Image (cartoon, rainbow, N blue to C red; front, side):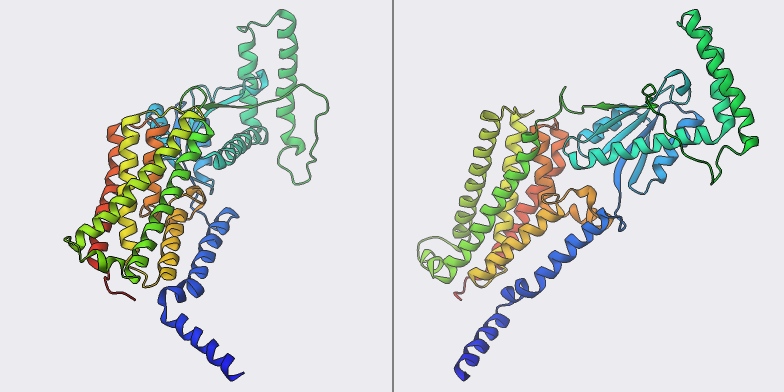
Length: 430
């Protein structure tokens, strides 16, 4: 029994001495649980930051202003008012906002009593399919709230009914139809005068009633706008950038572990006996990682084009994106190889770092479901910029100016990571 306790104590001491292994055994699971717990709390109403949408009020009426205000009051939305529909559409197409809602001219004048629905225009980022249904549902609900306000405020409803009566004579209806509508609307006007006195509107004891077998009634019409092409991007065009990034992260983690393995086995020491300096040894390892990541990206992109029929919007910009992402993860590989003394620690650190970058960068969970401070942290994740660069060249139809920021961020991270990692790298065998 004493021998068993001695062996167990020895392994526990080794675990404590291996700082990387200790961290990923006890502390990383806490980080992982807290991260997803925070996200799920946001999704279930625990204080998420809300979905970013743009609202364009082209009607500029009292009714449209009231509807826009109701969208701003919705806790699930972070609303940015704008006046230019084309500019808003461009921002959403490039991933700057999740969606835009246009309140077109005539919204306030729509007469539901004449079958004229309240029209809205909605455009959603094609890569945000998980949020599209939520956004449309909330916008529809807000429109129905306005409809409820019309019926609960008899003065507004009477004005609408009287306007409808006045416009019937100038309509294209035949005489019989005009008579029917005038009779109905005059009766409705009389009802709206007498109903408040009888306590019909707004009372707690008012009973709900449901129509049965009547004509279809659709007071809200939402027109969806495709932001990319006539039918929007292919689902494979949306999914493949994430797949490519996961493949590249695997390459970076693998090469980082191999550097630690070669150091601990003395391979790097033997290489240094050759007529080359340390920097050339590391540059050779970096070049191998770079070529591998470019190769993985190329294979997946050829598959995307040849098998799934997706044509990138710009092949030259796609090449720039692939090279920028490769440079970025070569630098990350070099930096991660300095953080673990053993292969196990290097592997744990490497993959843990990759998972955190993927979580923060939208590679595992849509950014719209994250809290405000998580959205801010997402700007620090190379995964976010990598996916944006790939999407921009494949289906977002980015131009050179649009590609400048993500590619510049990726190149800066890669070069800085490689320089810092090279200086920090420990050549001593462990």
